[in-house]
Length: 331
Image (cartoon, rainbow, N blue to C red; front, side, top):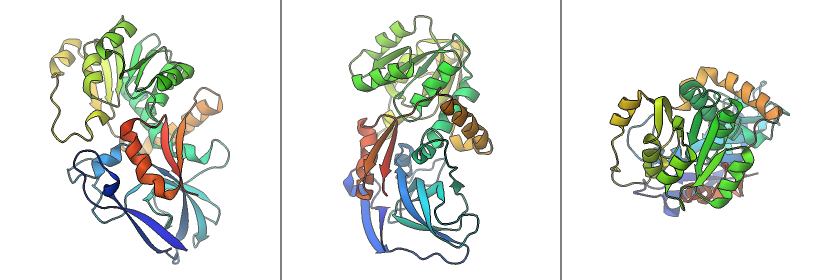
């Protein structure tokens, strides 16, 4: 069997391009005793991977030039020398961007049959859903009647955040980059949704939140965040999850300094990484699964087909081409 791999060809300056990636082909590996051979079924593409293409120090080690890029993958066990993972088992884990991979099973989570589509373990029941769950419920702690703003609300994390806030009885405002995404957020139950590309974002947010903002889940940064900070209520809580507006910037962005606004409102700003909550992941998956089974949570996926389309799907993240979770169906 031939095995294609996608490697980091070079570290991008500014936005990545097709030249950032290198395809190589080799023979598929053979599992040794204590290993399994995995066939990739779905590959997750995520904005945080842009940071790993840089050599800068961060919360996770950078990708190495010439080495395979890795991320969330759903895979099928096609050969097994491990009793706990028989042939046919479906697993999710952090795996290389390649068609076949050998593993000793460490770090793999077996996907249970039945509760949701297997791709959801890269989305609603995976890293994005858990990011929403812990960031909103632990850091923001929304109360019934409060106003919650979510930036990047039509993304894999943001759409879950908004629905969780509605479950908690909050009034929810989301920002997104197209009229189609705004309409979808309304379908999900968002009270207000704003197209930041066509609206004056400061005026639109002020009109949507006449009583101010109690919780802000920040996936984007930039001008949207500047506008939200002008609306913070006393003791507002801010979960800092992502800053996609600046991921491809070649210079540090300059904007309003937020410290005075945080001081005057006694607001809490907390950055977090979902791995901070790793011991609590089973609790989060259980609760998200329960709410999904009860029909309280919906989830959207943008699925591209074909292993060779993984780079294009990744690049599309920074053009706003996806609604919900961006995935590539490989097999």
